[in-house]
Image 1 (cartoon, helix red, strand yellow):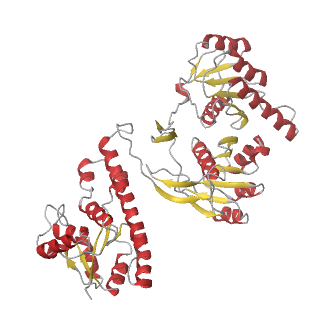
Image 2: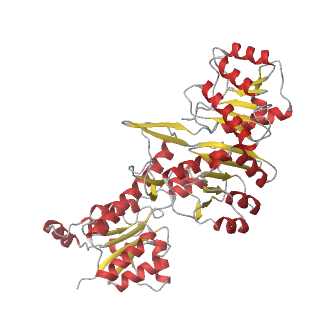
Image 3: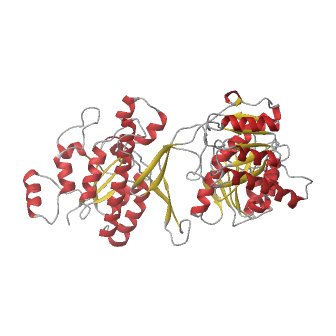
Length: 518
């Protein structure tokens, strides 16, 4: 029986020795190049150098080694085409029946350097050419581009002595998806502009979800783009698989918590915060965030911007919580949450940078809307106090807190804050006045729930994600007890709104930055 030939040339050598040994066991002769050949020989596996097949040495620092008819003819020839077979005999070309190639790590290099010379030399040419040739001819050639697929191929060989057509086609599809991602990363780097003439977007399915927002919708989680700590890269330590809505809400919660440096807890329902608090102790922040709206917090998502401790975990475990996400957790905290088997604990290893750039996409009929991430950031020095009344230190701190929270509330957004704790949140209303009234009503409801003498909006500050087109929205905040308001400004009615603030004797700060969130 004619022996089969496998060409192995990989950058990632994970699992290569075992894979090659299995191929030899199933009657394959091994062809290889460079460092891959050296590694295999060191493992005691007989290897034929590709240069011995081509009759041509590697040249130009390895830029040219497999781009040769004796290689690509062996990959592309149809075994059922007499003309192809005659050409092979005439030119002395032999079949190559299996190819295992993974590419120079361009994407990984891109995260480490922006040096053009280094990146150019990390662009693989021969690897994609062999992968694409083999994938095109997958009726006859098995192609593997990921070490994770070695086991699947070995299992097929062990079971049937060969790789069946269905698996060969599946592996070929994975190759074209891989080379598409690879080329997109290179094209994006070379274009140097997220908003170039062509939008290159590739992603890899990380998880198939049970359904989307509703049971009749399909859904999956895909990973891709710039590395960023968060839901897509988090390790889930316990609990059942996450749903589409879980992932969407958890992402919103974690991005909100990342806005703060002090220990902070954010509790989210339907992508909006129902309670956010910062404190010196994380457990205190948890209790304050919960007290802000314990009714809405039931079945919510909890995020922390620091490692979870045992006291905080005990508090979280006291109510029904869908997901907890944090950069880390103590062993005690993990053990406490493990007693709640349906609770999902996700650890990210780090917090995302709220000021980092990035691209956000939304599908529309017939296309996509693309925009840069809302990484807008202001400091106390950036705000303009436009009223006669000036803020004290507490009001200023609470205005900055409220502004950061408002950035993550669906528009129209109003957020009341007192002592670094949300007092009432109005989200997603068509009228800014209605958002203000809802936020105030939430605060009154919480006062009744807890038996407080007055709602926490009395003596609070408030933030609005966009300007007030009329004074009525501001007046609703004043009626609720706000003593200071922070908003972007920029309305034709700014003078009227400022006059209303002065008439009420409250502080008004303008940021010059809007935070619409749809």
